[in-house]
Length: 240
View (tube, rainbow, N blue to C red):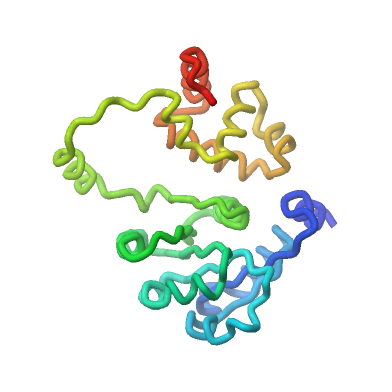
């Protein structure tokens, strides 16, 4: 019953489907039960992307998320446009175990389409994994740290770029998503993660993930520094 109430709080009056494209070796019945009990959604599995495309007419309209295993990156690159047409507004995410392979896929994906894609690392704790899955169910894309450019590549990019002026506080804050901005404003009011979760009708795990992301985007070490940057922007009268 608690799971049903939790689900109805996050997705009121809706019932969603999650489709996982991958082998049962990696996505077992136990994994499906865990997802279904945590979010009160229905999970389906397909052996490959071509079978998904061939079943276009029978896919449920309530399909919210399609997770594609890294073993199908070539198929995903080849059939990406067809898949987009098939799943409509559903979020597409790549589940990966190899960060280098996922980075290579991302570079190729961005070179051929403007469609956003999410990422779901598999070598993390169950708690964090479920938090990232929750964000994807909310159509919020997560960019894991291990997909950031390697230091050598990043240094080379920096050395070959012209100097740019430092980013102001308000520009840092404008980088945040609407939800991250809401979390930040509640942090500024001194609210705890538990209170923020209650106020926004999300879990504490999701709050922690939002805090991690907003701190990183703002370029500060912790939430206290984020509050300081917020006040600095407010003092400049540049917050909108």
